[in-house]
Structures are given as structure tokens and as C-alpha cells.
Image 1 (cartoon, each protein chain N blue to C red):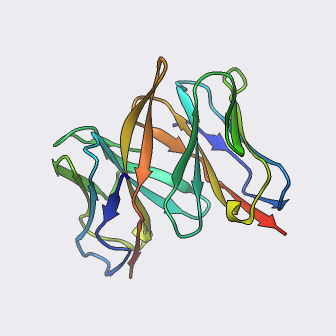
Image 2: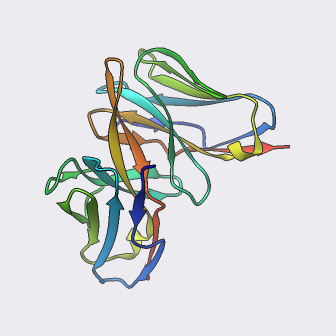
Length: 109
Length: 118
């Protein structure tokens, strides 16, 4: 497997920017996913990074450094609806994906 | 819209019972997955299937089996349920996405089945 580490919980203020970090083992690594999961709901796809660098998608951006085994998800202009768990997941092959335990983000007014 | 459905949202079973969890997807996806999600442990892969009648063990297959007789349906079977199998079970199917020279599989999840084994 590919051990994945991410913070358990984070709190941020509405309108602010928050960065959620993720580290993973680099052996056999192919690409890095971020998923969002609201409480009681299924995870939904946010992003996939395979090359080094930043990929921007609206208020959300995801960064990858393959050499460092490091990724982050950046959320700008936080809204209350962004309160959710954010799952970092590494892909080591065509189908198999290993998920981290998730970071529970609470957005406060 | 991709739709992945699971047969039950909540299920209560007794120790030793045989349990079937059904998952159906309507987008002709090749790959299907079964995960369990537990607090502090995250999503863990039980089994996946990349074609009809094909299956591969995930990270925690012990105590589970699967069946994929039709492309759209992937069943998870607990032959003899135990209390440590109380969990949220999530099914997913995946679509291969081409982005330039990259290929990756975006997974679409069902709503989950919360199973309690007494």
C-alpha cells in the first residue's frame, strides 16, 4: 500500500484561504486524487494531479511535488458549504487507489 | 449523470448471517469497487472488479467475497457476518478519463450502506 498522511481536522474562517496538506509514499506512485465528502454523503471527485505543479479549478487548486511525495489542496474564498472531509488518495496503478483518513474541515463565520 | 445505487442505506444483521450488499451503476463502467469506511481508518478497499466475472483482492478482503455476473452489478457478500464488520460500505465505479497523455480513473461513489452486525 501507499501510506498517506493528512491532518485529522482543520478550522478556517468564511472568506479565508485554507491549505490541506497530504504526504504519501513515492514508491509505485502514479497520481494523486482529492475527493470531497460531506457528512453522511458519498465522496465526490475534486482533482487529479500526475505532474508536478499547481492545477486550478475555480476556488479549488491542487498541487503536487512528486520528488517530495507531497500534495496540497488549496481552498479560496471559503464558504460555509465547504465544511466537509477532504480525502487525499494516491494511485499506484490503473485501477487501485489508496485513500488517506481524510481531513475534516470546519468553516466558521 | 452517473448513477451508482446501493440496495440499502441501513441494514441490521445478526452474527453468523449471510449478508448481500448490491451495487448497480448505469454508465457502462468497466471498473467497480467495494470499500468500507471507518472512523480514523478512512476508506479501505475490499475488492474490485475490472470486468464481468473478474475480481481482484483489495487491502482487506478477509471475510468478504464478491460477484460480478453482469457489467452493471457488483455484489459484496459477507459469508458469516461478524461484529467487526459493522461499518459503512461504499460502492464505486470508475470511468477512464483522458487528459492529454494522462489516463486516470475517476471514481463515482454510491450513497453507502451502513451495516450493523449485532
